[in-house]
Amino acid sequence: MAQEQPQLRTDWRPPTETVFFDCSRAIYLPPRLPDGTTATNVIRRVYLDGKALVRFELAVFGNAKHHYPDSKGRLDEFARFFWKSDVEVAEDKPERLATALPKLVQNFAEATSSPGTPPPLNRACTILEPQILVIAEGRRGELEAIARRVDTEGMIWVAVRSLKMVGWANKIDTVYVLHVPEYLNDQFRTRFDYLRLIERQTAWLHADLLALVHIVRSCLLGKVGADIVSEYILELAKGLLSVPELDGPARFLLAGLMRVLKEFHGNRISLLVSRMKASALSDEVKDTLGTFLQLPASLRFVGDVSSVRKPTENSALLTDGIPEYFSCYPDPS
Image 1 (cartoon, helix red, strand yellow):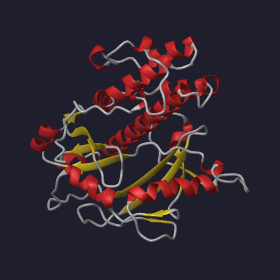
Image 2 (cartoon, one colour; image 1 turned 90 degrees about the horizontal axis):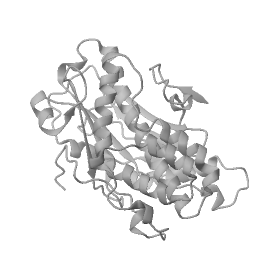
Image 3 (cartoon, rainbow, N blue to C red; image 1 turned 45 degrees about the horizontal axis):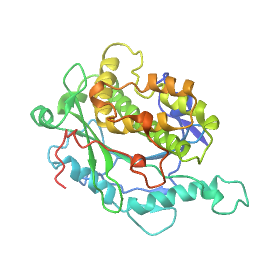
Image 4 (cartoon, one colour; image 1 turned 45 degrees about the vertical axis):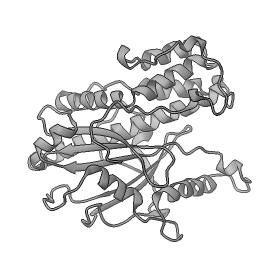
């Protein structure tokens, strides 16, 4: 049965973004946080946009009103601990997320296919790259050295890194949402909602951008007709990089967040633009997409995209670029 997330103003996004299906029986997560603290909330949800995108949300949380001064460690260690935790898909034996995620997607595809649909038609889906988000607290001096402030009070900081994870071919986008210990002492509900807003906007941008890159890539390879997906592409791109018209601190917060995410995803967005210009999409769609995906000159794709030839399956043009020049947090790997 579909459920709706607790109320939080996100009316600039489609209504389906706040409706989810509980999948707690499909996968079991560890009951502890990376620092050993007992989790007070475990989330296992699946979101459908009504078109082609399915997004799984798997999360463990501690009590946001408690401080954990003894819980110290590097942020990348927290992310890697979660990634390496043992999970269980359905009734299978414990395994790491790297092998559990493809199995979870396969089970979903089979369960939602029409009865009698033979493989591989009931598995006709592509697993895009995951994203890990770590919410943690730290002293202001520590945060200033590793992240960028995104709120008016100087209490919330965001950093993004690409981390190499065991069992996964590509580096994984890892977002650190950090706040000072006293942040949630006052106005708890309002300030906690700001953290929820950051988490949602970060997840939406990541999912929409990777879906766009994949669909445009498929158009470029001739795997899907451009006329079939044009409307969906525009729908995904329309709100991708824009900041919604919110009031006061919330708008400043999202504007700061989007600056950080745009820089991190700069290469990926430029790659999307280059593929789009070389694809069979109509000129009208290309012009509209170009408006939605405007980049600062310093972040635009270098090269003459008008002369790009149609690539083969293994062409370098089809390699999803992840920028290495943005280093908010030092990755020791």
